[in-house]
Image (cartoon, rainbow, N blue to C red):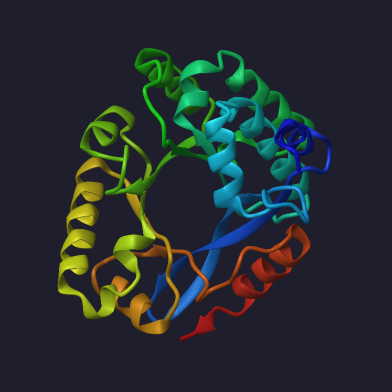
Length: 258
């Protein structure tokens, strides 16, 4: 696809496919779905369909805010059929939060249009290309919290999700990047990092979500280390809303024995 047409394809209706990956509470050998991370796939049949390629392109073009809005609207429209009890976690670039003065009103209006309560929402802060306006960024987080939105910090331990970001954001959720999770069952050093992050989370009154859980040994190691929220291919790959809703109902009625 020619470069000048790629952004148009993303922004057009139907250009983004929303998919949902379960976030599971794990305890006592069982897991139960508590919510979903809303993920995005780019235009089908193009090289932008893969999420990493899509967002690398978006950041290169400095179109984070426009594409964040399109992804969020697509996700929330699709999420209308998901159970009311399920939390929804949407990804938003820190640059969008710091530069897009109309973002909070856009989000509130979109939630209203979709009939989804703000108290079901977690905004997951992601960033790969700072700087952004720190004061505006923090003011936007304050406005979101006043509306009942929880805040998550993505990729804790990597890139811009460092101690400064932790102190600035004071998140409700801290997501441990899959780099530290994969192979943690046989790696004491990764286990040590996870324990440190979990200790920081307790200090800040936050909960930890471990990403990239792909096998039983990893799940058991994380549970032993005190991590109670997880997501990854072990539970499910990202799926469209209809399948996600059906899986939620099954997990609530029949917690899966591990």
